[in-house]
Amino acid sequence: MNPFNFSASTGDAGRLGRPDHAPSAGLVGGRARRGLLESWRIFLWFASAFLVTGLYAQTGNGGGKPDDTRANDRSAEDHERKQAFTEAMALYRSKDHSRAEERLLRGNRHQSRTLGWYLESAGKLTQVALSLRQQYDLHGAVLAAQRAQALLEEAGKAAGLADKLRERAAVYEMKGYLEDELLRDPDAARASYEKAKKIDPQSVRAGKAIEHLDADQAKDARLRGKS
Image (cartoon, helix red, strand yellow):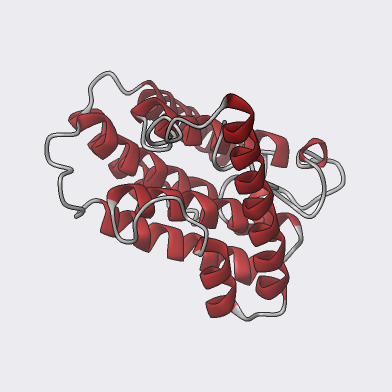
């Protein structure tokens, strides 16, 4: 189960990618030529990095519960996450950002201030930022992205991270995504991706992201040359 895919907007997931009927990605960072569908696709691709690390795996075996009981527990957890997201989005739209964040993160499955908690929280806030941008709340989107970035900074200092190469790389992969897609800072994004590659030379996500940054930079140079 993707822990970030718990109701990405006020509509269903199929309405996330509407580049012809929604603001472009360039309205809050990112690039004007990248549609919303692509923005969400890239985000979920990055989010899957945390699944690979096992940070979001269910802990334990359900205490020996029968399969149907564990399924019911997971269903209840999914419902709570969706409800939390819906209520948090309403608070974000009313500009009550402090209460919105508290509601959004209240149901985190990881213990507070652990590496898993920081990554889970940053993922939720990134999804909020993308949803707010889709709803033309550009100021709110930037604030949510900045909060996610701050949590990722804290994640980089979390205890027990030194020997976990994949987890360390995932922190900087997600940080680079925020800086490129939402905070419109390609130089900072490149630095984050390069740090991820240095930590984990096998990082496909960081490698692909750097390739895209290089391609965008080359395209921008060609456009400037024609102007």
